[in-house]
Length: 332
Image (cartoon, rainbow, N blue to C red; front, side, top):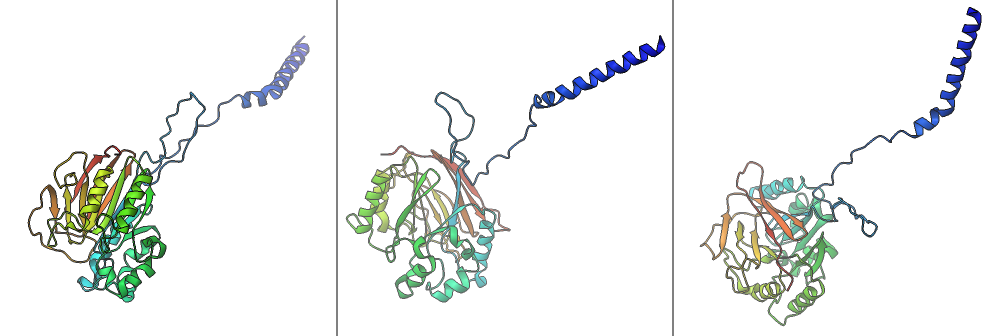
């Protein structure tokens, strides 16, 4: 009797084992896959584009939704001032943003924009960002051989040779670099080009930059040289203008084509703080909101669809900062 019970038990266990062997793989296949967490996209690079079927919903951000970092300054490398320490200090700030698009608002290599000054003063500092720099030409850049070293150094990135104006895209923004050292009055070749470029690129958000500031409280003051350019830009609904020439930082309230406050007008910045020396302020210009000449530094902007953030970042050891945000005005 006991022997029969043991044998039946053995047979039962054998049957169970065989069943487990047969269905085990199916049970394994039915298990959910392990979950993974993808890191969020950085603020300096737009997430990849995604597509969905008609009627489907998605929580993926649109391209450029988090913005692209756009950073820079003008009046940069001057080895006659503290051995070029200013440009070295501001270059250290740019090192923190390896994916940023870099702009310059002129006067890259003091005093005369010579090949030697570009090689010995600009190249060791801001020169390491040359591959992602979009320059605009300054008056000091043109002293040596009418700017030949400048155009040789930057090549195609400086725009057409001896013209120096061009446009490009940064995320969802249209960006325009102009030349304040050549004719910029209504009817000039540059202004004809600008009008056509704006008509071709009717984007919600547009930014322009050049060297000699239209509005400034600095030693050079407000210069009417680019007044016609400002009007063309205002009439097209351009949102931001950047300049330098005065070696200081200044932020203006949005203005219309006559320099009067306009919430839907152009907000401008003077960012002559790249390292080429510091100027005293002359007198407060109308609509000036913030001014500083205590530090070198750069203007960092995050260009987003329909809006922008801005922040002035000082050189290491300095404390002055300025920051805020704004919305793009409707396309006109």
